Image 1 (cartoon, rainbow, N blue to C red):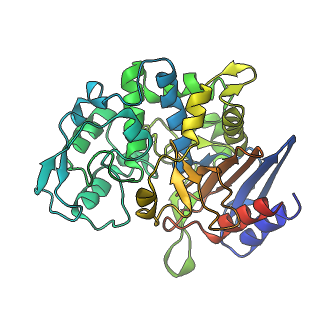
Image 2: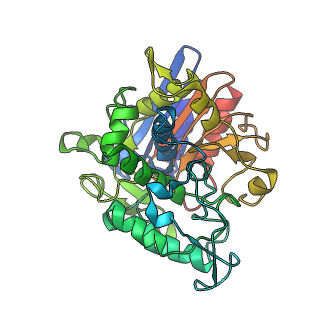
Length: 382
């Protein structure tokens, strides 16, 4: 694609990112470009097979893995999850979103599998991060996506979650992030396998996503760049070196944001969805699961209440679905998501387009940074 390398080079040269990899696939053509280096000021040159911390573009992969259990009949979308997650058998909900933590009422109904997939399970982040229940949730549990060292093992994590009141009633509102981590615990318990093994068996191995995992083995660490966040006075701070947090198995494999992968691997995942759930003649997901995964399930009111995260978008399973053309890149039906580590990945069922952008510079908030928006704009224009 004309200009793709130039776009990355511009943001490398102005110091926004040390390096990046971008991929655009459409029809029978795929273009992948790499620019910059593994570190600010030097290091190895960025490569097309560089490994990146995916952060929240892990979420679609997690949702697809859980849906394999629905396809097998081992779970139903309308099934209460309390049979597998007894920690959610009798949840409490704050009386109003801004209520103090002990001002609670019982949940009006059980949390279902589909509540988890649509992010309407009662736990998660609304637009206001200052709410008492949200502060406790964030401070107690939600470090796994960008720092797996400080998150407890799944059983303890669920026990802690059960002690935090929900911020909204089940089914009532879209709340970000937490439900994907609960999906991971649910999949592990239903399958009887640790989440890394389950995910590999159901999704990664059938799609030959050989570089995707919850940690990077020693023989591949040379392909993992340093991870940064913006620091004071514009000086980047190191969040994670290559031999750091992702160099060994985490206690809590995060379905919300724990995977490391490459642009090529995410393309393989996207192509499976575009093919209706098949890859190389092998069925990974049913056509119905793919359809539901890439269809918006939110009401207009629910979409309107989460504008901090969603811009002209609804939510399918594990990712957003464009429903309005708010920006030139908001193509109706476009499915995918962004990651707090500076990543994004989308597919457009209507024309088979796949776009993946991977950087190692953390986002400062839910609003996509300029590089990401310019990448989407360029891909849409082409």
